[in-house]
Image (cartoon, rainbow, N blue to C red):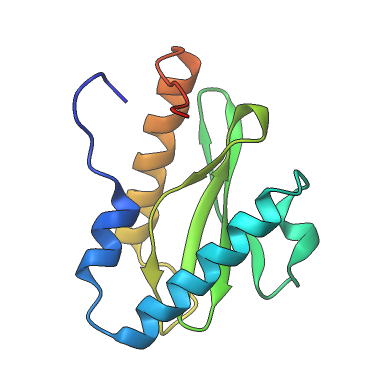
Amino acid sequence: MDGGEEECCLIKDLQAMADRRDLRAVLQALAKLVQVAALGEPLEVHYDKKQCHPLHRFHHAGKDRVVWRIRKNSIRLPFYYGEGRLIFLTGVLVKRKDKLTSAERASLEKQVKKYIDEEQANNLRLVP
């Protein structure tokens, strides 16, 4: 995002997964996410409320922000709706409990704030 090489959090999370069931759940969740996103509608329209709902809210750059999540078994895919219907995936959470830890909340906020700041500075570009 800042012109340098950035490591993809999602890929890093996948590489660190030891449990094959979790990895399979992530790949299934991502496959459905791609199919649903291609329809161009808000994601929550295509999932029930237990599968897709707001995960965390915070204030940044003069606005209230919402990080959403998609759930598949013990996997959580946190995401943020960016400008122009862009979906920013922050990574993967393996959750055996529903509550976020303070470290998880801080990490989500940090990633989304960085994304928003770069978006507002017009430093992001889509790569075909």
